[in-house]
Image 1 (cartoon, rainbow, N blue to C red):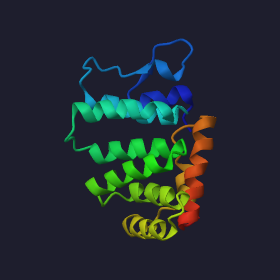
Image 2 (image 1 turned 45 degrees about the horizontal axis):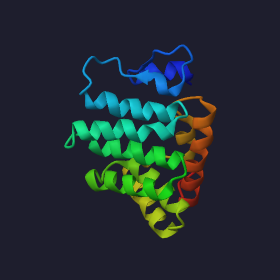
Image 3 (image 1 turned 180 degrees about the vertical axis):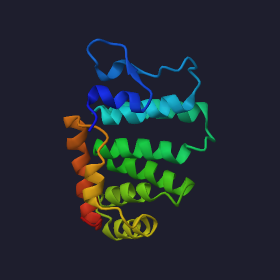
Image 4 (image 1 turned 180 degrees about the horizontal axis):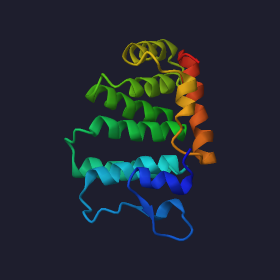
Amino acid sequence: MPTRTSAAPRCGLRCDHPSGRCGSWRSPSADRNYANAHAFAGITKVFLGCAEETEAHVTEAMRLSPRDPMLAIWHLFVGGANLHLNRIDRALHELQRSVDINPNDALTRFYLASALALAGRTAEAAAAVGIGIARMPSFTIGRFRAQARSDNPRYLAQRELIIDGMRCAGVPE
């Protein structure tokens, strides 16, 4: 599993501050208008336990490239970050936007199912799980847990909320 410092190179980010605090991460790209660098800076914040910083980065990516082919994934990044922060209504909005753009992405369906279950919308959550399983039959909570992108304690603790939602929605163990 990557550590806090080893998670950064995966997404092309580096820390220029000796403390390594979240606010000091930035893209190594010389082009400030490279939308993908902003989006991946945002998701890296989640892995570092700083999900509250994700939306600003991804919103900048969306501003720079509003019709980007990665737009559905960027909405997943923001929805997932909001889910990490227990902002269920905001997560639902972003995850639904992601599904509207790309209805075939299974992972988005599982995140949406988690958010729906946490919102008490169990029938819709179960339907989202059904669609997700149809697209990715091997998905389980155990696999999701094993594929954590960081060993940051805050990230892992926040991720448990998502796992609880998936469990309530009926995702197989």
